Image (cartoon, rainbow, N blue to C red):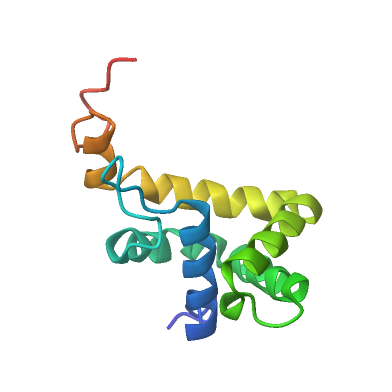
Length: 129
């Protein structure tokens, strides 16, 4: 491994990130779409966060601080409270997580089809707006 390349997320960090993104975008039976913590979407996310790994780690550490322990082991209501506080006191980190999550979520073929869009990249053909 290149010494300039940060190591991948630890198991605990991956679990925390999975909880964050699953809470951020839950599955919908109504629209037939998975949550952002779906295996395929989460695998894409793990690849996508690589350039921002230091910031992602900082965000997850801050969530643990706000949780008073381990964010990933909290129940849903406690995670929601910690996440709300996180968005308030660390808006740049919260925006980073939201941006990375939504980018990966809306690349998923199932999500694209649920929106009535072709499951394909936007270029070179573009999409009608």
